[in-house]
Length: 304
Image 1: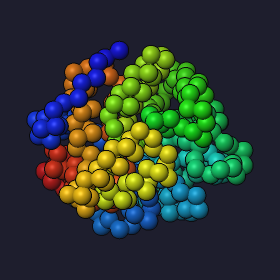
Image 2: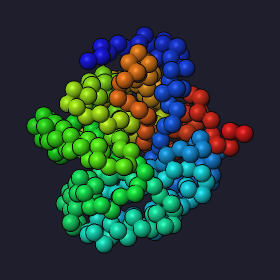
Image 3: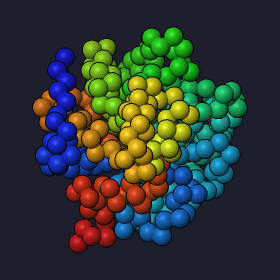
Image 4: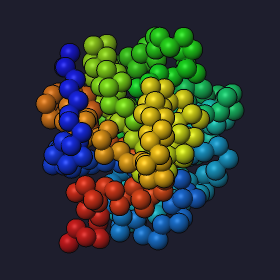
C-alpha cells in the first residue's frame, strides 16, 4: 500500500500547479437541464470533447434530458446521462430512454446508479439490475457510483461490506463487458480518506478506475448544506474548520488544496487508482469552468 504524504501548504497552492494541471486533464462535469439552459454556449467554458454528466432528478421530463444531451453533442461534448434505477418503472421505460438518447443525441456513455428515491417506482432498485438488463449493450462507457466516505443507506453500520460486495460484482461485470467501466464518486473535501478508500479498493481486488468527485468553487454555506444532505462524512470537518476562520468565511471555497494533494500522490504513485476528476458545480457551472481554466484547461473556443 502506498504511503500517503501531505504536501506543504505552499506547495499545494502553487508548487504543484504543473502536477495539478495534468491531473485535471480530461476532467468531467455535471449539469442538469435547468442549469444547462442558463449557459449560452458551453464551448466558451469547457475543453472540446469534455464528458458532461446530465443529472436526472426525479420529476425531470425525459424530453428535457434528451434535449440537453442533443445540445451537448451538437456543441462538441460527450453527454453521459444518469440512469437512476429507482425512478425507472419498467423495462419498456428503460428501453425507450436508451433508444431516445441513442437515436436523438448519439449517446454512447451512461452513469448507472440506484438513485435517491427512497422506494423504487417499479422493477429496478439497483445499478446491477440495470447492467444485467442488457439495455446498455453496445455502449462504449458505463460508470457506476462510489462513496469514499461510506454509504449509510447500504451499510448502516459503516462496515462497507455490502458496498464492497456490489463493487466486486461490478468488477466481474466489467471483465465480461465490452464497455469501459469506472467508478464515479460522491464529492469529497479531504484527501486522506479518499486515498485510504482507493487503496482499499485495490486491496479488495477492485481495479475499476476511479473518477473522483469534487465540488467546484462555491460559498461555504452552500457546500456545508450539500455535504450534510449527501451524507459526506469526514470531509465535513474540513468545511467546519474553514467556517471557524472568520477571515475566510465569506470567500468561496475552492478545491485547489484537495486536488493538489491527490495530484502529488498520483505523481508519486503512478498506479494509484484515480484516473480522472469529476466536478459537481455546486456554486455554478461558470465559476467551476473558470477555475479549471485558471489551472490550465483551455475551453474549446480558445483551442484554435
